[in-house]
View 1 (cartoon, rainbow, N blue to C red):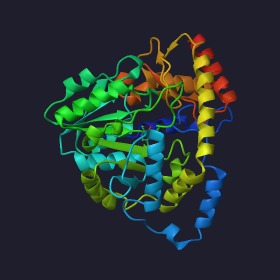
View 2: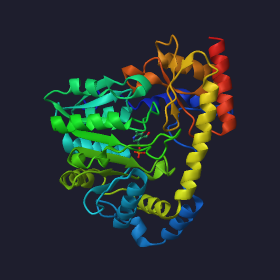
View 3: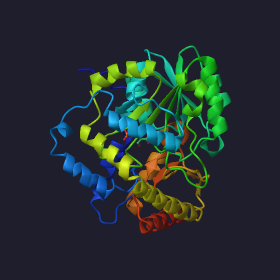
Length: 385
Ligand SMILES: Cc1ncc(COP(=O)(O)O)c(C=O)c1O
């Protein structure tokens, strides 16, 4: 039997986790591969959800768009946090995570053989989704500080281009895209009548005085902009599968056809948990983000001690994406680091060819002691190699 997915790369993290299996059970194993922060939702929100479990409606579908109360509360949050105006009635759909939102967006937009321009290094699930839909990815390497280069993006546009995909704050680089850069890309999308898909899954995780700029703030461009968000990272609820997509009514009406076909609605209990956190849990989310801020300071201090690792300090997320001097095969390097030190980091090449020679270090789930231990190990490893 032949499957149409055979040419799509298998999920790279699953393969690595298999390779790391025999180390994972060791008490010394340090996981700097996982793309999650360490926290789970606030206790009060979990307690409120426990109560809701005895209500029959918690166990049933919601509308395809998601609970209206959640959409209303989320619109207020997006106004306060990102400054954007979203009509909860017809410009917002709750999805089973941002991945579901992206895949649904691509299925809604893309015809066979059309392409999406993706600055690299990229978030690999987006590339998988574009290929699954029969589309093509046009990779455009980022420049200094991992910022996208608008002129290069414009040059890459051809008659098959449907859109540009930006992730800011970025996975895997942590880059927070400059307002000017984003504005130039918005202008290009308007001029060429293509769509800007903006993944803002880490919009709250911005540090060092930087600020997140959502392209939807450009009121002249709302017809061209689709915004994706997630409750997985900042709200610590990745297992509940809740995210969202924002776009003009014309788009959300079409998107709902995909939503109804693929998942009907996001998990109801997860939607209720997100609602409780939005209403009463934001202070505790902020504390977790402050914890990440301190971890980042420590990690950037320690990484400077390792001569072989070169990295600009980026202002977002809990990822660090250093270039390893002299490294030509990041997969082999990562396996060697794992075998020699019991520490898992991710090979840069899984984030596209532009990531080769880099590793991705995620400090999200670590304690400060574990960050110190990890950099002690990496320091020793690179001293002796
Ligand atoms: C940029 C980006 N978008 C989306 C996701 C997936 O989010 P969700 O769990 O909401 O599907 C991730 C997870 O790593 C991510 O890094």
